[in-house]
Amino acid sequence: MGLFEIIAVLISLAALFSYLNERFIRLPATIALMLIALLLSLGLIVLDLLGLGMAERAEVLLGQVDFNQTLMHGMLSFLLFAGALHVNLEDLARQKWVIGLLATLGVVLSTFIIGFLSWWLLGRIGIELPLIYCLLFGALISPTDPIAVLGILKTANAPKSLETKITGESLFNDGIGVVVFLVIFGIAVEGREAGVVSVAELLLLEAGGGILFGLLLGGLAYYLLKSVDNYSVEILISLAVVTGGYALAEALHLSAPIAVVVAGLLIGNHGRLLAMSAHSREHLDTFWKLADEILNAVLFVLMGLEILVLTFSGQYLVAGVLLIPIVLFARLVSVAVPVALLRHRRRFSPHVVKVMTWGGLRGGISVALALSLPDGPERDVILVVTYVIVVFSILVQGLTIGRVLKRASLDAE
Image 1 (tube, rainbow, N blue to C red):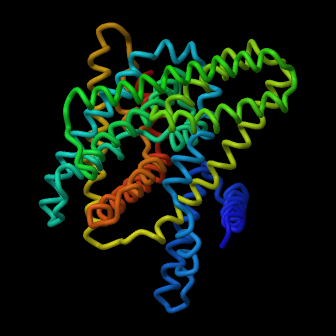
Image 2 (cartoon, rainbow, N blue to C red; image 1 turned 90 degrees about the vertical axis):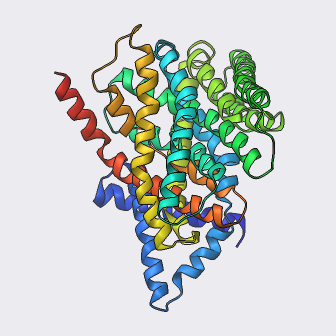
Image 3 (cartoon, one colour; image 1 turned 180 degrees about the vertical axis):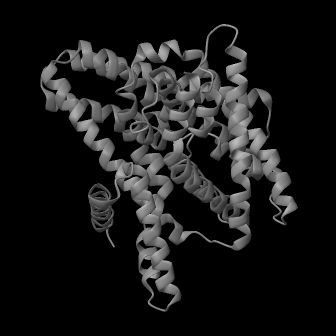
């Protein structure tokens, strides 16, 4: 099956599932699409067990889709840019210390807590996974997914300050999380030495370089946007930032996700207000809103279908379920510590730790990173437990975050 046929199938499924949700189910779009795709996958597996062979045909289709490449080197740049485009820079600046600590210290704390506790737990249930691979699992599951978070926050009615914290953290911590993952991946798979200086240099180059490159990219785009007044040209410039900028950042070994987020923030604030006419601004917003919704739909359908190509076993499923509380505990600590460090200099709402813990959703980025691991028993374990946690995060946490927010606001009154 060719690329066009694969895209046609995925978009057609996304359109069908979106229609079913809008007409009958009425759940938040991202949750509904993944749930319907997941139920379809389970139905195909049941039909396969009955001898009808339906799952095998679907597996052939999915086997031609490299989820890691599709998300990390394709969709992610568009989705991050679309998410950053409408984040208010002033609101973000007011929360900069909280977001900075959550995206750095929080990710590192969570990585080590999950790594050591999962190593202990898996050993107790008879799954021998080396500690370095458990830390690798901690690194890929620790970042909250901006795609999942942004998609669900739109319908959760979160207070503005809390929404800025969660959104800002999710936009930046996936870039930091990917860097931490690459450091541990180099040690576990490629046999690199774990020197403090070399790790610090890599973090500084990837993250710091990504910020600087994003500022340069956003500044160049601002100059170009200001010098023309044609919405089709301006949309093309934004597309060049997303595609060309992301690809160049990767070629320079900088954090491409962080670079695109920074460029998106600059264009979304200064570019939209100071370099565009109202007419161009309206067209740009409409284009990126549609791109965001279409790509989100395809991504969550793809995530629901991925169950067809995973190697499941009862032991691995049990491990995934048992690791959910550990991941939530690590998230609780990684939020509580930065908040505690900043309480002396700023006020927080009474339930900020609880809400941010439950609102820290995991999504496609964690699955994509797990799929990037080399074939082997370690990959099989990590991939299944990651998928179980992501499904729980999106379906359970995503469906209940609105109630958690409502309860927190009632308790604060």
